[in-house]
Image 1 (tube, rainbow, N blue to C red):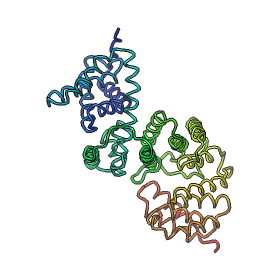
Image 2: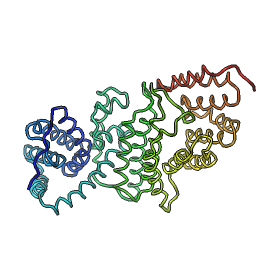
Image 3: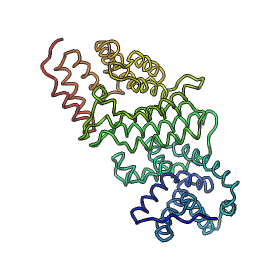
Image 4: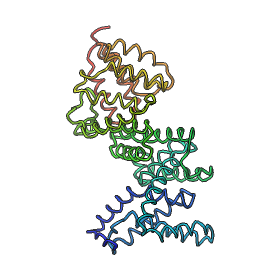
Amino acid sequence: MTPPPVPTASTTDLHRVVDAVWRMESARIVGALTRVTGDVGLAEELAQDALVAALESWPGTGVPAKPGAWLMATAKHRAIDAFRRADTLRRKTEQLGRELDEAEDPDWAAALDETVEDDVLRLVFIACHQVLSREARVALTLRLVGGLTTGEIARAFLVPEKTLAQRIVRAKRTLTAAHVPFETPAGAEFTARVSSVLEVLYLIFNEGYSATAGEDLIRPSLCQEAMRLGRILAGLVPAEPEVHGLVALMEIQASRLAARVGPDGQAITLTDQNRAAWDRVLISRGLAALGRAEESDAALGPYALQASIAACHARATSVEDTDWARIAALYEALAEMTRSPVVELNRAVAVSRAYGADSGLELVDALAGDPALAGYHLLPTVRGDLLEQLGRRDQARAEFERAASLTRNERERTLLLARAAACGPELGG
């Protein structure tokens, strides 16, 4: 017996329900439709048609007991109509018809769940394909896998909605023109594509954790979306340790979000954060994910190493209680693996905490001429902090002012200018 539909109280409530259902089910629907049509652009259009149909139908009929299944069936019916109008793809029409006819079969439904999960994994891989630019991969992942609207993504990354929409359209056309197969890659291709997927999730999370530009220091919704997608990916490929490493990193870092901003949105440095405000549930989840990454016989990858560093902070009761020597060693291992000057800069901070500001400043000064750090505001920020600790306050003030001129984030600029103003007369050489 089919369960009765769930009534909705108002149009506002209905839109809220539809939005929630779309966020949860869109990746499954678009993935299934892409498998059948072989065209991710067409698949998304059909899924959007189903969403419009829901907004038209549900006010009168109520929200179905299984709204995701309703959207899936409606989208597949739209696909059949599109194929029939074109008088082509009869085989695909028959395949869709069989799926719809068999939808009431419990055994078929269980098999479909497994197929749909495979579809979601394939959709993740196609959205993060290396044929796309980094910006396009981020936008398409949030659009197809995250279920975010074009406007939401544009606001998150502070670009005009029209620009973002064009980016997504070009990305879908690029995938079609490149004849990217809708499949889960294998072997070396799988490894390369997983790296691309993890990079995209990492970029999304980092933009939420420390916004590149704008008036807000953090954008928690982006962090939450990156974590949600990371958890989905960890469930789809549980044997990949670096997936668990990235999930661990995001969970532990996200635990500090509430403590990173004050009541008026001002930035609060790690040294001044109230650790009682750190989310212990997220820390526990992150440590558990790190444990799963460490179960592998392989050496820790870059995300798991960063998660290990974050875990050192999470386990410490204060800045002074932090195992800075271990953090410095972990950064050294990470630097050898990535050859990143940004990692070297972070290592310099850990070294200064473990072995003194002079030692850290020596490492920072060695990075001063690195072209990759030209215009990077955190280089003068770190240098200013170390100079201030050494009593060289005039020089520290100049570094903080330079850092403030380089950042595009208003909250960071305010903090850096405040630190510059707080530097008194120079006390010593």
